[in-house]
Length: 111
Image 1 (cartoon, rainbow, N blue to C red):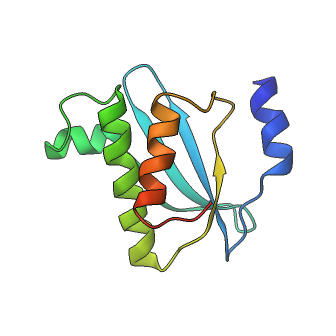
Image 2: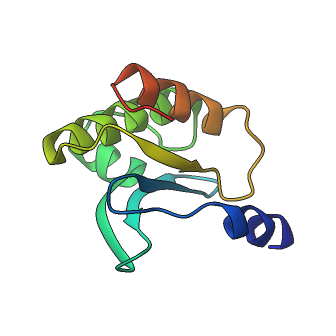
Image 3: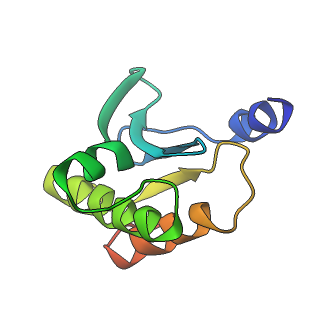
């Protein structure tokens, strides 16, 4: 919690550059594009939704994180969003978080 608060002091999502917030649980990942000025979630994706759609078998691995990164990048493209601020939520930047970020970059998001 302290690590997350320390990171969030510096990271703010503006209307022209939204915040890409990540939540990681044992079984799933959830990603949101947030406008902090209006306190609104613009779009969100989760591995749970990908699992229901049949795109991934399980939501708690690197493969699912890569799929989620591509999915959030395509949703952002539909809204015309290209640049975001990456909020890793206090989680270490490796494993599923790194895979998600790399896939989102390959999908066209810049951060």
